[in-house]
Amino acid sequence: MLRLEPLIAALPEGHALAAGTHVDIADLRDEPLVGYPSRHRSVIHDAVQEACRAAGFTARPTEVAETSTLIAFVAAGLGVALVPRSVQHLRITGAIYRPLTGTPPTVALAVATRSAESNPAVHRAVEVITRLVKSDA
Image (cartoon, rainbow, N blue to C red; front, side, top):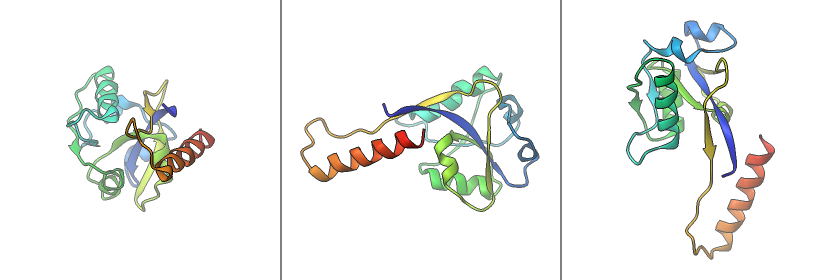
């Protein structure tokens, strides 16, 4: 694990909740959600589902496979999303980010390789990713 990262809200720029400084997950109850795939048990998918359950509702997001696509859907006004905080570095016109109220749910960020990986380029990439992620904490 590289670090635990809090979830934040991704909202269309003109959304009513975008006017505030923070978003309460319960306020997303009647909003269309965009989320990560449920297949293959995404850590982020599971964290969003649990956060919504804790706020008193069941999330039924439109599922997309890529983070950039998810934020593009949000920017286009197709829904709102809960994403790891580092996603806010992905600047797509029309999407804004707000922290969650209270103690936000977190997800573990990790990097994985094959157990017997011998390629020096892969090892170097893991070193660079680890350094960058830890310096952005």
